[in-house]
Image (cartoon, rainbow, N blue to C red; front, side, top):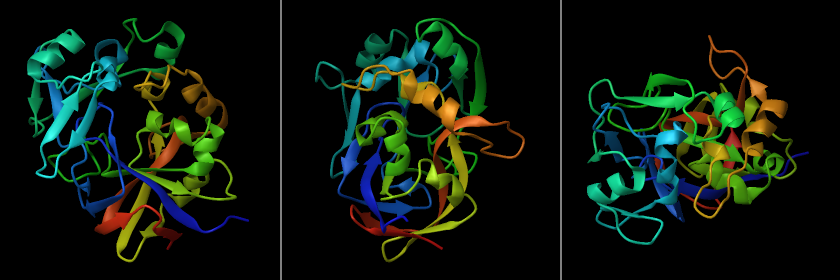
Length: 268
C-alpha cells in the first residue's frame, strides 16, 4: 500500500537542453514553472531550435548549466565555469547559433531516432524526425510538448535511483512511498492536486528520446537509462502512436499557484 505523496523536488531549465537548477519553491502558471525554458539556441544554418534530442549536434549543451537571477536574467556557464555568450556557445557546440527568447514562427527541432543512437553511438549521423514545439502548451515557450513534466521516485528507483532524475529532466519529482514502478502511468486522464491551490491535468505518458542516455554534467553516459524503459515500460503515450519507452507524465495547468518542496500531492 502506498504512503502519502509529496513533492520531493522542483526543477527548472532556463535554457533549453542545458542543465537546470533545483528550486525550494516555484510559481506555476499556465506556462509551467516560472522561468522554465524561456530561452533557447537557434541554429543559424537550419533555422531549427538546438536540442540535445539530436545528440550528434547538440549534446554539448548538457555540459552547460543555466541559472536565473532575481531580476530574471538567465546566466549560462560552460563546463569550465565561464559565462557563455553567443560566441561561447558557437565555440562549445561547433556550429553558429543565436540566443532567442521567443520561438520563431513554425519553430522546429530534430529528434534522433533513439534506437539508432543506442546502436551506433551519439557521434554518428543517424536518422532524425523533425517536429514542432509545445503542442499542449501556450504559445511562446520552448517546451517539447506540455508545460510540466513529472516523474515519481518509484519510477526513478526502477532506473537507478533518485540521483538519475537529472537524466529525465523533470519539473517535479513526486515522492511515492511504497508505489510500484511507473505508477504515474495510471495518472493519465486524472487531476493531480499539489498543495493548497495547484491543480494539474495529467494528459500523457512521457516518451523518452536519446537524451537520458547522454552524459549530464557529472553523470556519465548510460544506455540503460533508455533500455530499461524499453524493456519494462512501453506504453502508448498518445492516440496514433505505437508503444514507446516512457518515464514520467506530462501535465497542463488547471489552476496555478506556488508550490514548495514537501507539499502534499493527491489524485483527484
